[in-house]
Length: 319
Image (tube, rainbow, N blue to C red; front, side, top):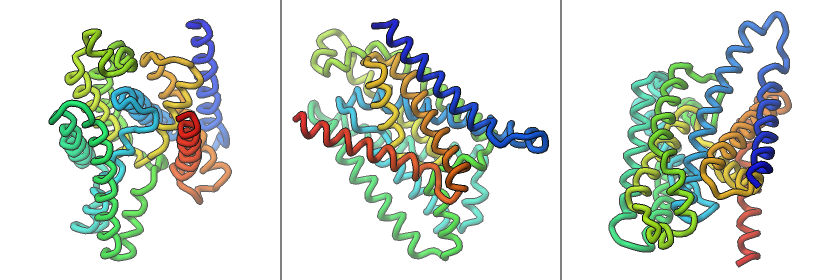
């Protein structure tokens, strides 16, 4: 089985390399290669960072919640990001939002999102069992609240400024800032270094909370570390590229089914690679087929939403 899993992982990586090569090389010629190739490679690097953040955070979050459908993005972080961007336009104007392309503003956005997620996650430890369901419900309600407040402010701002705010509602990889990509990589890398050493404990936790505690896993500390790391990863990835709500659901579940494993070391690789394939394929379709008329996250969310609906129907039939 490990050899077969290794072969499947190798196939997945080869597919990813082919899609990356297609995205980076299609349309290049002697006149544009000096400009286009470095730009595309920067986009691929940013997508890799985002894929690692979303893939690993979703894998660990699903283990903690004991649910293969939930992800950190589904409990309000995307809505909080939209609320922050809209609030800046509402309070300071579109010029301030356009100027928010430096490291200081990026870190401030990540800090606000991480702090909000930390406050929300802290409710897990006010009691014993059942709080994980309260966490998910509170996150969904908070996400709807942030989205409603953002919609209210959008109705009150100038239509021209609304167009600027609307641009932040969709994931965009065409005008990435290289310094921000580097800072995002540092944030995601630091959170991954904190989170990944717990992979074997997460493997045990996949058996269930009671079994994991009985086998010696320090459950509260493990959950706190993973939730904090997931909040940092998702916040940084969303602040860099924008919200891609259904990508992590699609990536983690597709990787789990393809690799046939519960081990989080394999899931880290599989979910990251599948996420990168989806981002590259979506961006390739937007640029070469749709002529930039549709944002890439619309394509990804369409596929991911259909996949999530299929998962829900399958679980409903098996229940």
